[in-house]
Length: 403
Image 1 (spheres, one colour):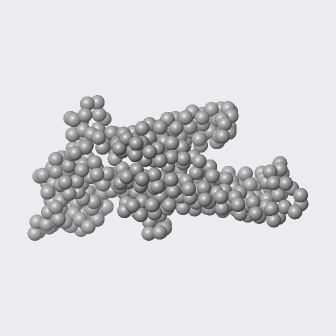
Image 2: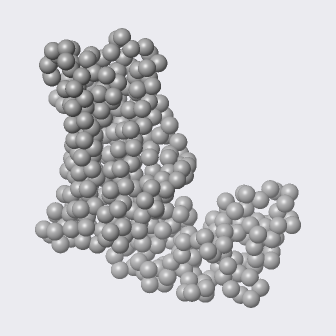
Image 3: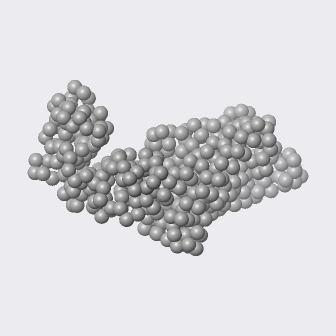
C-alpha cells in the first residue's frame, strides 16, 4: 500500500501507510464499544469520541517508541530515512546495520523503555485522578471501579495498560521484535559473528510467530489462552500478528543467508560494462521502439551530447509520458536525473548495492566513479550468480529478501 508523507519529527520524515487508516478506525470503534460497556451511562457519541482520542494517543506513543530507536541510531552515526505508521504499528527505516553489539542493544532496548515510561506516567496520573475523585468510598481494585472512572481517568488507565502490553510484547526474544534485537546483540557479543546471531534470533522470531498463529486459531475456536484470552476477533488479530512476525523473521533469516553468499563480492564483479546506453536527445518513442521492445531490461543509462552520464530512463518514466507525446518528448525530459538516483561505486559490496536497489524500488543500479558510468548492476544478474554459486538456492526469493 502507498504511504503518505505527513511531516517530520526530530528531523525524521513521518509517513502513514494507507493501512493505518483501517486500523485506526477499527481501534476507535472497538475502544468506543469497550468504554461504553464500562460506562453504560455515557452516550454512544461520548464513548466513540473517547475511543478516537485513545487511538490517537496510542499511535502517538508508538511514534515515540520508534523515534527513540531513531535517535539512538543517529547518535551512533547511522542514517534514518523515515518512520512509517502502518497496520501493525510503526516501522523505522534505519539505513545501515548497527556497528557493534553495544549499539544494537541500546537501539533495541530504548523503544520498550519509552513504552514502559509512557505506561508509568499514564497509570500514575490515572491513579492520582482516581484517588482525588473517589470520595464515594469505592476502593481501588473493586468490581465497579471502572464504572467510577471519569473520561480522563479512563483514557489514562487504558493508555498505561496498552503501553505496558506493547513493551512486554516487543521484548519477546525473536526478530524483528526489539527483544529479538537484544537477543541478537547478546549472541553477537558472545560469538563475535553478527550473521550467525541474526540467523538464531530470526529462527526464534519465526517460532514465536507460529506460536501466535496457533494460539490465535485456538482462541478463535473458543479456547482460553493464558494472557491472551479467547474470542474470534481477538484470536483472528493474534493470528494475523503472528503471521506478520513469522514473515518478517523469515525475511531477516533469508537476508542473513544472502549476506553469507555474497560475502566479498563487489559491484565491479557482477556489473555489465556495456549495453544500449542511450542519448538524451533521442525521443521516448525511439527508445521504446528500438530498445524497450527488443530487450528485457527495465532501465537504461542516459548520456548527454558531451558523453556525460546524466540519468536513467526506466519503464516507469516511459509510462508517465502520454503515448501521443512520446514522439516529441526527448529522453532528457522524461528520465530520472542522476541527482535523484541511488548509485553504487565499483568497490561497493553487492549486498549493500542490492539493498539500495530494493529501498529505491529499482531492479538495477548505475555503477559509476564520479560522473563516469562504468557499468550497470542488475538484480537478475545477482540472482543468476547466486544460482551458479549456491547449491539449492532460490535466487528470486532470496534476492527479494534484501531491504
